[in-house]
Length: 509
Image (cartoon, rainbow, N blue to C red; front, side, top):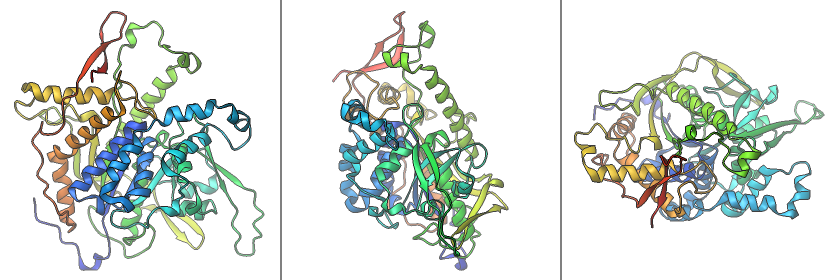
């Protein structure tokens, strides 16, 4: 490791920003995110994380972690495994099909997203509201649950996340935060249901209705507060930012400009001159679906549901999310198309200038009860580590002789097959005859492989922490490729009309 960069005495109160973003991807993302957080605890990093930002399925684990981990600590992981393997989708469907709910569904303010919130509340959060989360501190990071605003009112534009998407389109990111509720909605986040926020973050378009937030007029300076109510309609956070990085960029940018204190993302101190003031760990649960046989079917509608909602919607939406994902990573300095001599791409960068000039990077500042935006004069430089499920098979491929070892190929291959068969759904489904525990074991192994065996990612993060005098209290030596994981007992399933292997698998035990 290189020598540490000396931080000036004048900035000892300033804390560099370390954030984790957890992407969308249903139960796959929730469980993968949980296992990566467990790996970060093993490294001694978890207590140092300032914020966890999440979208869609990633918000399930982010909210669950924020509510329970500070109380349970080491006992959290077994508790979380049991909670997060539950079948949220079928519970939601059963409630939706219950005739007792039909009359309510026809009324205002009650819809498919309301039922989803009830599912989350009964199965995970048990009536908890945001004030029941622990005050931010070591092992208790800020939890930034993200949703997408559907053409939000102009008066609320100052409260939308500043990052890649700000003002670039009508769909912008709204973060469930104290400031957003207090200064933009005239409300109190502390009394808001955690389950409702998670439902808003995972309200997939066409299936779930947007969640409605009310903006109450403020009474100030003699005003009687007679302004009409405004309504903010929010839906799946993955539509605007499927990686959950924009809220982290916004928070890191604010801390860099204002030198924010340890316990708050909003308290002003001296401006920092740290050259690399933040590090972002991006937990990416995106996969290539297991079945790739579209060319063998004259009609892509294979089920009754496909007759109601044509699958072309899924193909189009998935293509947009893939493009958005690639653009977001490139904005962070991770180029999926640029290959190294070993044939891989660079998963971690020690320093990258995130472009924040102009409207995309305006800094939020408070003046009394008002939030105003002031333009950035420069970019934000961060280190980035991309931890992606898609890399489970190829990580370490450049190691001489790695894939000539049959055991390595089968270990990585069967793990990768199970992962790519785990559909983006609120239950574990995709592979045939596989129990939820098997999916979880594959995702746990994936997290171990992608964290413990990524020498480049470990080195870049470790150096950044040393440069900022942050003690990790553990060894950072990477495991040799092929050290982690197990070989799963699965077999290929032939699904195509011609008998061609479909990419789908079946569990044999």
